[in-house]
Length: 216
Length: 291
Image (cartoon, rainbow over all chains, first blue to last red; front, side, top):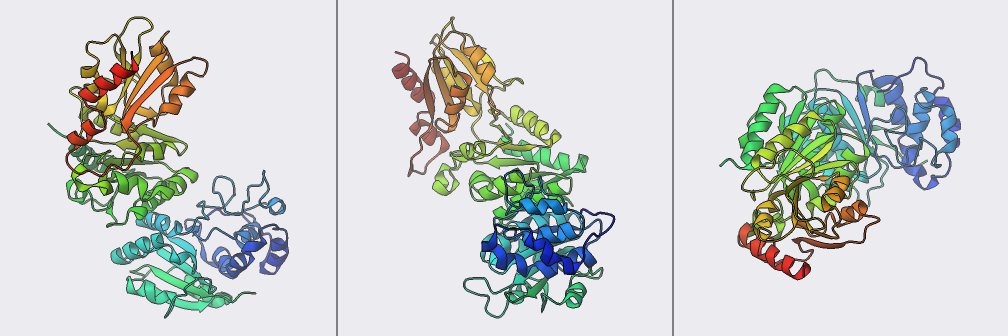
């Protein structure tokens, strides 16, 4: 994870930062759903040697706002969101945007890459969406990581009820069937998120944290 | 004689033992031949994951080798090649077996003459098409020593002898202005046979991306006729010839596997003949073109 010396803004400043990211309103629902999870990750969970992969790369406004709040992305860069010379596009590019560890946006890529990262022993958190989990490529990674007990991998599945056919009996059930531990938490509850997302040195299996949110 | 595939497995084992940067990712092909190793990850029959995992390993500083059968290494996970590796600017060595029709008897599922044109459509890839096991050995070591994205296309088809290192190697000189016949990878032997009594210059390339534009221009000299013989989809590098000769009126004959559904099983040898890539086929095509 890219780090800076001092946080520049707090959680309460995020709405103001988000208001500077205009033009991608079609992804507002997706973006705002992740805001609290991202804040808790960057404010309380991720260490210097940890990796975060935003697989759900569409609607990255909340991601950029959190990176800006933490001093990783220059705040002034938020104003040019999606413009020709901006490092911040509607889908993040690791070669342009500071702090972006993996370029994403096409759905169903992040978990496979996170699996490769975790195979080296590094701790990695990968955020996916409940709609994104329709993509079959995710399940190649879920199956493999579960079979081999890839304990350094944490998947965060945002559940804002956007999967077209839904997930009967819950997303977590699918992960558990493949050998993961899984837990559903309130995706706006910072204490619950921190408790669920904090590193678990005793883990022997990959884990999935389903963060449930309602559209604002 | 050791096949390219067998040599690759030997080299992969050697690389795992000798270079801590190297990791191998397979999907149930070559698994036993490469053997168990802490950095050999067989992900099961999950080919999209093969490339995703390779990208993750590259992100961590490893030099990943991803290996499978051609259609499962290039066609099925194509978007992972484009994004996980290419757009993220991560390096890997992709080593395929099967080529265009090595397993012709398996049918269309295992025939992949489109692979090189697909990889070539993505920016930043080096593509090697060795025509001999010793070339495959050299090109694999070369790829492993770098940090870019390389596609190494192994084949059961092989030339009678290796060609020593060189981007475009002229093996036979015609008279000034003679047509230039460019053989790619394992097409060299039938090209040499088909041109043995013709006044043509014969050149050979095993690295097709980047393409040797200047070398091709030099080999053509004052000539105007170019014949490109490729072991995959015909015309895969036709546009590269145009790039090499932007100011030179020229004629091009591009031989290769036609872009058409070919609903036949049989052997690779039968497919080579059916596509006009054996001695007789190339001889006939040259006779029509070089009237």
